[in-house]
Amino acid sequence: MEGDSVTLHTNVTEKLNDKEILWSFNNTLIARVIQNNAVYDDLQIKDRLQLDNQTGDLTITSIRTTDSGLYSFGYKNSSGGSVKTFSVTC
Image 1 (cartoon, rainbow, N blue to C red):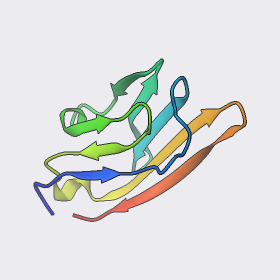
Image 2 (cartoon, helix red, strand yellow):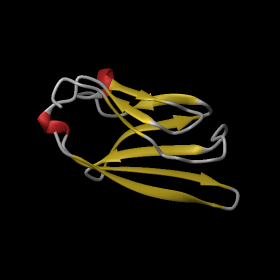
Image 3 (cartoon, rainbow, N blue to C red):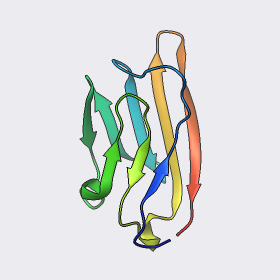
Image 4 (cartoon, rainbow, N blue to C red):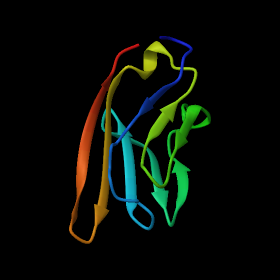
């Protein structure tokens, strides 16, 4: 799996336009969407992340063993929001 790409699918059925989207890795913020623009907070991995600002899906390219761990996705909307956790093992 090392060197491959992996996509973490949120399976959110609503469009996430204009929603606050957050992704963290082992409790450290790595990516978020602000006003429909993806912002990458972790300088060590930012060049290997692709965040879909409509679905919230996160793709990690050229995956490494150091990318193994827990990834958390969350978003907020007028009725609350959602949080999902993904375990990635490389």
